[in-house]
Amino acid sequence: MQRKAIIILILFIAAGIVALAVWKWTFKKSDISMASKKADVEIEAGILTQAFESNEEDANAKYLGKVIVVSGVISVISEEGQDISVYLKKDGDLSGVMCTFSPGTVDTNRIKVGNTVKIKGICDGYLMDVKLNKCSLEK
Amino acid sequence: MKKIFLAFLSIGLFQIAGAQKFIAKNGHIWFYSYTPIEVIEAHNRQVVSILDAATGDLQFNLLVKSFEFKIALMQEHFNENYMESDQYPKSSFKGKIMDPDKIDVEKDGVYPASVSGDLMLHGITKTVTTTGTLEIKGGSITAKAKFTVSPKDYNIEIPSLVENNIAKSIDIHVDVTYTLPQ
Image (cartoon, rainbow over the protein chains, first blue to last red):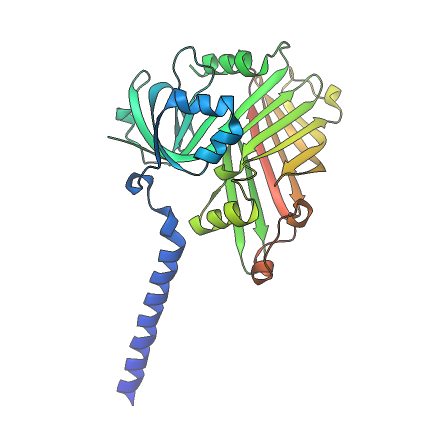
């Protein structure tokens, strides 16, 4: 009798663990880091910005919510709380691409003003500049 | 560097003539939806706002996709099913501070302010009125306010299955720090 109770208890715990794992998996599934996601588009920062400047609607249809690898020159690095943002803009261009990294995901030694970098992120749209979120630095 | 950046912004994008237009580039707007079943919270720290201290004109712009949720699936639902952010990527507010004369940007202090204007979200524009505070400290202004919106007013349909998980009125909090472009 006692043995039966123990088996039932073990079964319950096992079921609980499975349920928890499934729960975690469903809710975290789209949270996998950008670094492991395949890019939809690879583009130069200036060209991407120009696309939004000249026709925002078309650019939205093309790039919104897409994983984009953007290459460009770092013009400003800013820190807001835990977030680090890198602004890719060439001298003389009106606006550029603002790439925001999740806290603690960027090696700050690798980002310096004036450096040319490749950054992968999700395109949120255009608001004074093109916004990329959940960014990661490409090799 | 930041000053140069802001100066560039002011010249390039707003053609600001007067010295009274304050700009915020990393404003914070977040919302809460409380129900006994679920608490939903999302933050957007990339809100752009302009405040004209002389006239009281106030404008906010944000990208819907920049709202971050703790749970990725919620964020997905928010964008795809409720806000339809592919179709309506932006949300904005254009309004006025009722009595800008009472606010002296030269003098540090906390000033109460009432604001009224048009809130556009999910492609629908409605008038919103609220009160908040403006804190002036060493030339920068921090604006804080709270108001509520009802998803129904903005044609956001919530399926009956999750009807009780999402509040009928959602609290929206604003916390934006402006500086004068130089």
